[in-house]
Figure 1: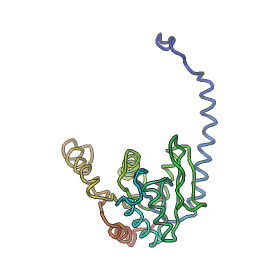
Figure 2: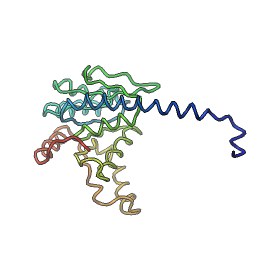
Figure 3: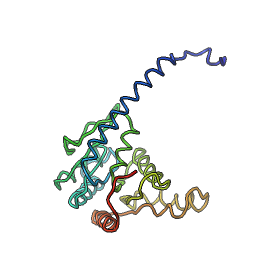
Figure 4: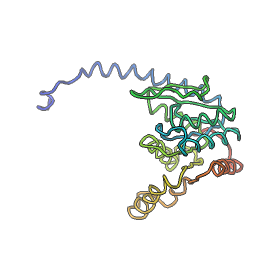
Length: 232
């Protein structure tokens, strides 16, 4: 054994392997519950954004209006079920009498489900990767409100899956030119043109809008020409 490893306390790897094996059943249970619940809901839009956005903030109120418009058009709304932009989107769906889904996650400091999630459409997850599958598999489009690391993670995960054809290409909307344009310019000039890490066609996978009517019209027009089907 390496001399360094001899000097430090090593956990019992046998116990760790046994725990990992049983953990598989918990993971499977989260997948089964998610699939059974979301499969009954129908076409949905997943809306992502910061948990720190507060009521009264312009992007909170815009998320309410976007979700309300989409729900009025018949789309269910899927969010992380927590506060901020998630709460705003669930609120919009609730105000429209639409389907309001919350995929909550057990975190050390957050998050309690917001009050606008339908009680029969609230799912709680321990595993981020299971939760992310649910966000993607049952969404026919994605709306990215301004957010932090979590929102960026979700945004780039969706774009990567579309770029690699692991999911069906669907509409992706980034809300707020003032928030997203700096990042998008860097992606265009640095990632694409300077270093060639992405292709010019990859820059066509999203649209940027500032108003709820633009968002709703984009989805309506897209699905006037494309079938509504679950991803992968």
